[in-house]
Length: 243
Image (cartoon, rainbow, N blue to C red; front, side):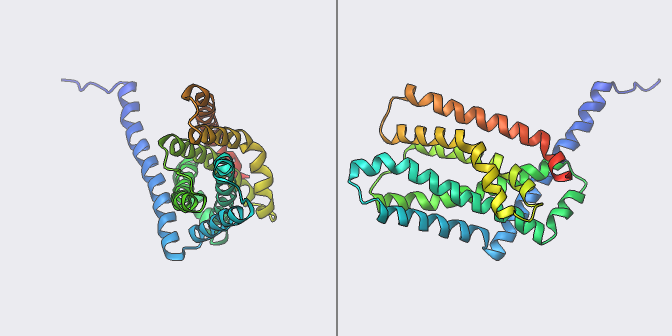
């Protein structure tokens, strides 16, 4: 009996599974590499954490306000702290790859370039979330404000994802230049203004007990921003690192 040749659809399905598995393994390997390197050096996370704690301490002594006024400015102070610490982390993350020659090795690896982007982005997000998890209780103690609100934590997660999605893409571009420490904030902050505004508005709404209907537009803006800019970064990362 003559063997039945597999259809084109079956061949495509079989070939796509190993490709998807290889992509996921490459992303996990990059994340693991970043975690292991940070555990050895403790350079990136410590710098972000010290910077974030200094910022909230400065604001604590500079803004000698009553309890109601402090609750009003809490969201702004938090997101200024997260944005500055996140920018420092994004810059150092790619700079260390470039200085150690790891970036060239990653680009020469036989994996999809987008796997490098997602690996670096998820690694940066983990570092940013660790800093935020330490900053929130410290801020709550200094400012006597309860920040452990599920809605607020959801906004922080969505805002951090969008910030890291754009920041990882731009840091991979800025790291190739001599003025990378200056160029990244110049490129990053104009693009993340929408997400910072939405995050501050959403955070303020949850802290002040605003109706969810009034907060939902800002949540939707964060979701749309995350999806759109992650998709854009996925499509253009290959061309950026080639340049």
